[in-house]
Every structure is written in structure tokens, then in C-alpha cells.
Length: 614
Ligand code: F6R
Image (cartoon, rainbow, N blue to C red; front, top):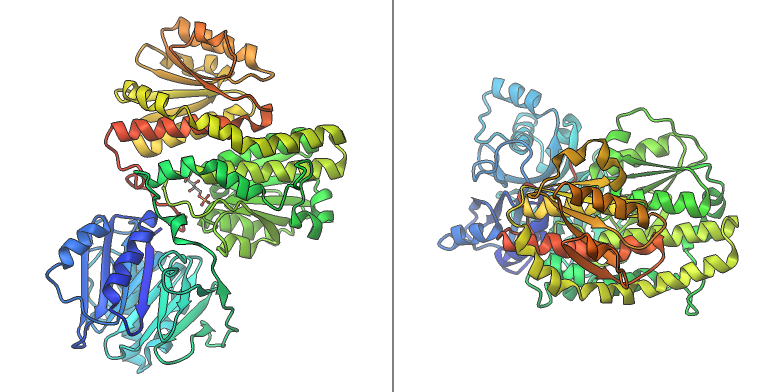
């Protein structure tokens, strides 16, 4: 939620900041803004509602000189999206400017107290309260910027990643974080700031991921200093990032989402590389070696996640229960954290998150750790908060996901959960050795089968215009395909703004069937598995009420085409891996429908890629 960029060095700050903002636009695009200390020593703040391009247009006739600056792309929480509420925010004297990602929960109290002291406000945001508090403390107590930030951060409750500049000291940026991510890049006589490493990697691969409660003093001509809010110096943990630019650029595709859909076969190979042996019949996960006992002795698994990651968790539940015979609960992290759940020390909690920064999932992890459970992370973003706050885990290694609608992260998560379930099942002897080997071998064939599934792209592109009229759609599936029905519906909702619901196909007769008429497209995942015959009956129930059925079927299917209006054919695989294949046409369907409707596929309204607020 909200993207932060900063630069201090000897180069022009403006182009670096703008390029960085574009990389971070996935985090929010309600407004964008920059603050730069100009060559003549002015602190210029420029902001515009909407995307970064609106900001660059606005800045086209402005003074954008200067070698120090901070910039922000916003996902609104407090205050409507507008230029007035856009960051950066000035302090009252206009000597300071701040950018912020997070929420200051007690901002209203602080604001009232400051107003009583004569402090004025120009915006409705919680962020402006923070910069005005910092200035008030500086003046009242005669403190330096650093000292005032330390005092102010003691008074605020909430989550933040912030950066502040002071025009009277153009060689310094002060940054701090609590529960919102912040990375400092270290170059040759220059420093960078980013909500993640993507705005930094063009210039340096040396980064420091700030920890919760850390303040960074970024001073030109000096070493980076990191300290706690209390002022205790922290050891500098410099890491080398390993993301290449090709991974975050569109590579010839019209949208990141389409690129990421097409990348999936390669991504899954990367996900399995080094984990499945060359013979393709055995999985080794280092987490299983290091924490074997904790994982093998699990009496119960609790999966916590949000959105698409939660759907992957539902597939994980079926895998762990059927292959490992371990009971599994799948929880929305946002509910779990506030529900006073029963957690035992011999529970294994698996937290799934693409970004590794989802605030609700982080809070659920904290709760589980306090209860003494062993917490295992399944994450994509390297070095993010979740892998740092879990005891161990597995990266999905699908590369940066930029499209706001998650695609390759979903299949990466399901692949990691499949590998983990297979490892555990083999060690616990809950499946025969031969079955284990066959299943591992089939998993290695999935990328090839995904390539086949991607060939449905043209057919789906042709079908898509038929569905643009729809106001509602239904997605049906059973068994492993039920979570996929939920995921297919979520993809359509997110990017085409068509209301869609996923249902277990047999539940339809308990209510939703009343919705069926000839206006209602129904997408049925009807691949060949144990429940195939039953799904055929469900399709007939829909047809009998005039519903329009598009079915995803397994190659060689001759039955379903008799009842379905459209049939999309997919390669066969084991039932538990079917979602990996069938997710592809569902992602493509959502994509092409949204494109036909002229929607901004990579930046759907009201959404952000990384939800760092609760
Ligand atoms: C949907 C989507 C979201 C995320 C959810 C959790 O396409 O992207 O539903 O899955 O916000 O995000 P992560 O996985 O980063 O914790």
C-alpha cells in the first residue's frame, strides 16, 4: 500500500524518483508526488491525482533541480484520492516534507492536541499529522530532526515506513519503519530508498532491509547509520539483491498480467529447480532437513493467508489431508488475528503470501508465534517481512509479480505446497513409495502441460467478447477445483469489475441455482477426476435452467460438449495438480474479458499489490 522512493547523491534526483515511482505503481496509484530540495535550496513539493504520468505532466514546467528528494505513490486510506491529500506533505513552516506508507491510528488525537497549540492542517491525512508533530517537537524542545523523529515515533500508534527531508540540511534523509517495508540501497556516494528493491536495482545491488522499529540516518558523505527508536546503534546488515531488470519489465507483452500468465511454465521450473532431483522422483526441501521434527510431529496445520494466497491454502489443505493425513484449517489471516483462536505448541502454522508484507498475515504470524506454534512461510518476495518473521519456510521463486491480479504466485504457491505435502507424506509413510515417486514425476511434467494449456489463449481471446455484457458470473468446481472456482471468480472481479462467485458445484442447488438464467455465464471446471460424473449432473442442472455453460475439460472428453456451450480442453494430469493447469484458462479468461471492456488490467481500481494496512 503506497510506494516510497528516495534519493540522495550527486545525480539529478527527479528522473531517479520518477522511474522508481513507476516501478512501485503496483502499490497504489490514487495519486503521486515528489519533494526535492532544489539547487537554490528551496523545498519543492509537486503532486497530482492519479498515476505517475499525471505527475510528470504536472512537473513539465516546474523546477525539478536538486540531488536529494523523496517521492510517493498513494493508495488512499485517510482522505479521498486528491492532489491535496497526496504525499509528500509539508510541515507548517514548509521546511520539512514527509512521505509515509501505513496508518497512524491515533492521528485524530494528536491532530486535536496540535490544533490546540495553533498548528494548522491542509489535508485530511494521518501523514500530515506526523510531519507537523515532528516539527512541533523540533521547535518546542529545540531538537534535531533525528531526535524529533525519535520522540514523535514514540507518540504514534500504527504502522509506518516514512522518509523526511529538511531543506536546512540537504545532505540528509531520515527514514524509519514499523510494519511497512523499507529498503535502503547503498551506492558510490549515493543512497536510495524504496518500499522494495525494484526502484534501486538499476543503480546498486547492495541493500539494507530495515527492521521493525529501525530508523535510518542517510547522510551524504557518511556511512549509513541504522538505530532503534531509542537511539541504540544497530548492526548494518548489507545484503546483495538478485533481481534482474528483465524480470520486472513487460518483455514485449501488452500487460504485466499477460506476461506473468505466460511465464508460469518457466516459473514453476524455477520453483522446482534444486528441490526435485534430476531423476525427477524425489523432493528435498531444506526447511524439511533443518526443521524435520517440528514438521513431522505436527498434530495440525493451520494455514493463514489472504485473497489468492488463501485460495492456494485451500488447495494445500486438500493436499496435506489426503497425502499426509494431517488435519488442516485454512484461515483468513484478517479474521484469525482477532478471533482468539485455539493454537497449540505442536501446531504448524503455514503463512502464505506473495508479497511477504501483508499486514494481516504478519499479525497472524505474530499471534501464532506468541502461542508457541512453529511458523512456516511460503513467500515470493525475497527478504520481505514474512520470511524474516517465520522460523523457516520456502520461497516460491517465481520472480517479481507486478500485475496487481496474482497469477504466477498462485501456481508457485500451489507447487510449493505440493512439494511440501509430498515430502511430509513420504517421510510419514502415509503414501506408498511408488505413488510418491509417480506424483513427484508428474509434478515435474506440469510446466510442459502448462505450455499446452497456454495454447488455449487464442480460443479464449475469441470467446471473451461474448461475456463482456455480463453483470454476474458463476464459477463452479468440486474437490481440488473448488478453490480454483473461487480463484477464477476473484480474477474476474478484480480486473473486469464483473461480479462473480465461486461455488462448490453441488452446493448450487442449496441456493445459488435461483440465479441461473440465460443471462448468467457459468464457468465449470469439469476436468476428469473422482467427481467427474457428479459435475456432469451439476452442468445438466444449470443447462436445464437455461444457463450458459463454458466448461474446462480434459483432452479426449466426449461427454461434456453435449451439454456445454463452449468447451476449453486441457491436458490430463493427477487430480491434485489439476488446479495448476486449469488456472491458466481462468486467468486468460479474466484477462481477455477485462481487455475487451477496456479496463486497466495491471492497475485495477481501488486495489494495491501489497496490502500493508489492515
Ligand atoms: C488477488 C490478489 C490478492 C492477494 C492478497 C494477499 O489477485 O493479488 O488477493 O492475494 O492481497 O497478498 P499476499 O499474497 O501478498 O499476502
